[in-house]
Length: 192
Image (cartoon, rainbow, N blue to C red):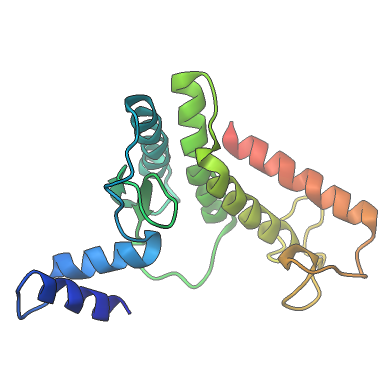
């Protein structure tokens, strides 16, 4: 799809060859949707989005386990994002360390932290970041055995365990509550 989108972009611009810029634009469209320059943001919202994305980028730049930032934009996209920070790995990884997982969470929460530090309030702009950070934290605890409390205890049963969206009869309600509390603490520590 990316190659096809890049080829269409080249044709629209009257060229016979696909360039690296075409591939980059096609990749961004696949990740975040088409640019929506018609979506007008007021000056205050533009500033909030700019600081939010800068928060992600700063955490990424200074965290030794975070992936480097490739691009930052505050141009709204069709998939709902008012801006985004694109990180690209320097090398292909097949394993995720606890430190790298925590770095992902910290980078995701860096946008919300920047909003709070600069503007003294929070917006709904971090909703997707919070959801993704929560998914990573739950996976660390329930799937990857990276929990200090549960250790390597298997908390999921198959690919659709209770943390993957389904429910598991193997986990008691107290265990679910303990996992929720550990996720909350992990997110709170990462945020701070």
